[in-house]
Each structure stands twice: as structure tokens, then as C-alpha cells.
Image 1 (cartoon, rainbow, N blue to C red):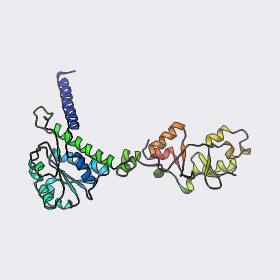
Image 2: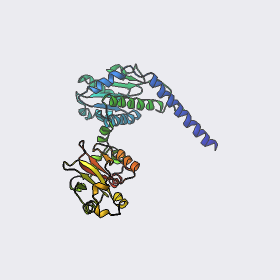
Image 3: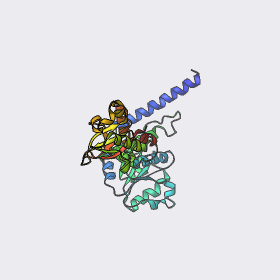
Length: 321
């Protein structure tokens, strides 16, 4: 390893160690107002309006996005733009979360005045408890005053990491207090790989006339016709009330070729088939298919009536696998 690469590696380890220790310190010294702020936001009728300038602004955007995606309505407003009309985005029902490591960011002044004028709750996030921002705040998220991790001690590094970590802690605390579930998370992430992982069987299954159904008195010829026309490689056997009594697959037909046409489908059907409820998450359905080495699932309601069919190709097309 060259001297330059060794120096770079040492620097990286030093930065990660310093920032990691800082986060642990914050964990051991959580701001006194943290619980009160969670309760304040939970009871709010409006949104959490986050603002900051420079690196604090970048972190603020991420905090607002994390809050919004985990069930807490939130929006980032740039402090400078706020002074030129965007304060109109802030309502009396909202809560302001203003971020400034020094607590003396001039651009936040108008937002502070706005909060005071309209009695909008103000949360200050800073490492300077005696700053203008923190003195004006109704609630305070005070960060420990620790050295920045850069070699000159000036570039926002440790401070931005702490701000981001505290924002994540706030979002997760709110999320858990609301019993926010994976299904709820999926509502806010409909696109991309994450969205596909949050989709349910009901979102992807085939319904209505696409379901391959056989009644108890059907012949093997009927099973062949239904399975061929529907194209899923299986058919659901139902009784007179429409309740699932078994599933017959093309594999069942191949394993019972001897005298096949003289038998009834229910004689060779699987009477305890693997099924899926409509609310099952798509990755869980994929796991079932892989575990039992089958290509499709019959989807049943609470009374075990077939309401859909899900093929592994449906999951592949949706990007689940």
C-alpha cells in the first residue's frame, strides 16, 4: 500500500471513529425536549416545516423527506425563499423545525419572527444552547458540542452527522408511536424496487374470469381444458358453495398418467394446497413459491373461497424477484 493510500485510509478511519463516537454520545445525552417534541408533532393538525441554510439545509431536506415517508407530514422550505413569499406555505397549524449548528444563521430570522407573530410552535436544532435561535425556540434539540471530524475542524462533518442521526431518531420515534407498518410504508413508496417489495398479493393477482376454477363433478378433460385456457398450470377445485377443496396442477396430471382419463380431478388433486391471502406482501408470496417449488398460488378469502391466482411471472414483472 502506498503512503498516500495509507494516509487516506487512516483519515477515513479517524473520521468514522470520531463521528461514530459522537452519535453514541448523543444517544447517551438525548435532548431533554425530545419526548415532548414527539408528542407535539403527533398532536399537530398540520405539517412539520423544516428549514436550514447550507449544509443544515441539505440535512433538513433529508429529515423532511424521512418524516414524510414514515407517516409524519413534513415539508422543507428554504429559508431565503421563505423571506420572499414562501412563508405563505407555513400555516398556523404547522410546526417549524429550524436547523442551525451555530444558532445564529441570519437567513432564519424571518421564519423565527413568523413563528412568533402567528404563535406557530418553533423547534430549534443547534449545538449552541445560548444562541439566538435556541433562545427563541419553544422546544430545543440541543446537540453536544463536539469537534468536527475534518483536519481543520471547520467543515461541517460531525455536526451534520449528529443532525441527521437525530432527525432519523425523531422520525422513527414518531413512526413507532403511530404503529406505522410495512404496508403503510408502501403507500408512500409506490415506485422502484422498494415500492415493488411493499406491494401485496391483491395488487398483482389475476381475478374474475382469469381464475381457473373446477367444480367437484368436473372430468379430467375439463381440468385439461381449464388449465390450458387459463395458462397458470393449475386449477382450483371448489364445492357447491365455492369453497376451495383442492388444487390440481399439471404436475399432478403427469404423475397420474396411468388411467388418467378414467379418473376424477378431485381424486388426484392436492387436498391441502398452499394458498395465499390477498393481504400478503409480494416478497412473502415469492418465498412461498420458492419454498414449495411451485409456479403459482391460489389466493383465497377468509372463507377459503378463491378470489385470485398469482403466478411467479407476475412477481418477476413487478420487480419483486
